Length: 229
Image (cartoon, rainbow, N blue to C red; front, side):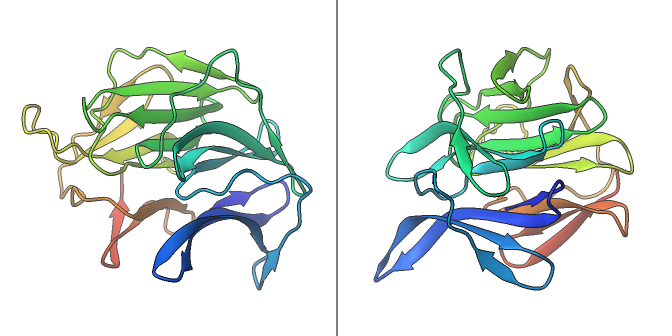
């Protein structure tokens, strides 16, 4: 789910839909106008999926969706223009398929769309940049340790930073939970003098609260946390 700034509405795609005693991966697109939800009937629909990475890219005024989880882990890229979906040809290179091991955010200060993907087996991560039409892998001096269940990303407008909250369950580097900011070329770990988020971040949502000028996080168990920089 993401706010479409060009059309001033919230876009929601897919999700796990109950079906009997199990779930199916939905491929519906819904729009929220501030008062009501509206179903859409686009001519082209991405395959159904749960937990895709999705952002609004103001440079092209479209919603960008990457990956997700279905019968297989997906690595496709799609654009929503307000009425229809179009798949992007990424034959020149793209991030490896990722499901819950990816976070996507738009850095307004540096005008970059940043995707962080991770491997639950090796605790390695990769940083990729979306330029509006294709993907480029970046090679920062430091990549956050990234594994376990999920990471959360949002742009903190009050401080001009793209913020990542993530964790690993790797005791070797003692990074059970950590907070990072993207500098435009590198990931910088935030010291966080107060509490850290609980290290099980799945499921969760991170958004910027413009009224209170804080990044807000809602976690499983209805826990709400605020990041003050």
